[in-house]
Length: 477
Image (cartoon, rainbow, N blue to C red; front, side, top):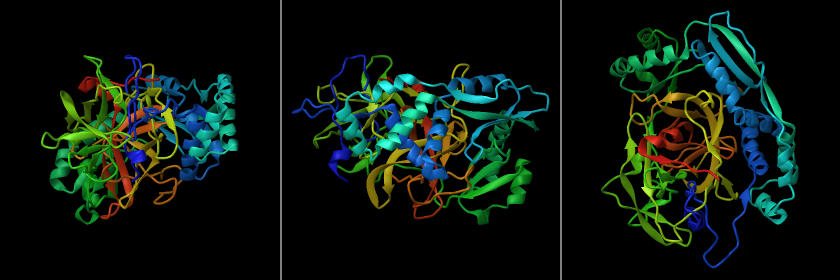
């Protein structure tokens, strides 16, 4: 892989800014140049991600833009619904099929509905961006392979606002939390009876249990349903759920120069304000010294901070203190793939909801940066659909990880090739998960449909709201 995309240089900023590079980092202007690197604006980012969504679900680009703006621009409304129905909610999810919208399943039949649509209000201020830095806009679109027509469509969608229906589905027999609690309590018994079971998820759309197993031949589905007392859907993952470090395309390297893991968004240490990079906790090994490699090929040692990394059933995160010289500083931006310009980091999405902000909703379309394939180390953005926020990584029994799958629910299509495909390759650990300009998580583990690890089944990440548990936080532009 070209060193152009495998390394980064940090940039001098005010001390109040943290370094927020993604797996490729954000290159500062070269030390011998005053030219600032171009950054994608919100319309360009929307157009770029919408092309992935359109390929995933077979919809028009305009429809893809509408859906992404709804998913990632109506947090407060979704949080309000979650709070209103918190005692009876059985499922809350985006349906990516022909009748796209938010579905709210509830227990009982006497629940009232006041809200009938999600709405992202018009934002006419975005038109001010059209004629700002015109030459940079031309350069950005060329690098991102975006046409003027595509970007203009994104501007229009943002300017006019968009909406989608809210459907209240009554009559569920139990709540999501009741089902999740039951599956958590049952996991040990299931694992004892069927050792090849890797993870059990609640499908809040159907109410079934989704069980991931290494071998379908070693599981009696009917007996498993009796043991769990719930209908079961089985998914075979021959290699199991594996952490994805130690091969190809990373920015943390060993002393010998071998790639080891990727870096995610940057953050600061809460107690001291020191700047650093976030990666996966399982990338930390006291016996493996790591180095951070910059844009010009030089590198410096980078070390974890005592008490600021975890790799367990709850989270898989680590903070590593960055260098302090002028050439080792950075900007609050991140790259989404190897060729398009950087994006500004403007916010984060929690795993679960609060009274003022929604959590990560099932059906949300999210993306990450990783390698193209086991044999092609070129970096690219790939995306998928959130199916659970109560999953496990390579530590069986966890229930706090976010699980993403290839698109398959709404459109009925499971992509294995092309732009709409979710990819995961060993070496992607520690990389960023995001949507538009918002940070979602840090990559932890993957599962594949084949022993050759060429067809991704699921990718699993730790939500960035767990950074507080290791004493770190993101800072935004």
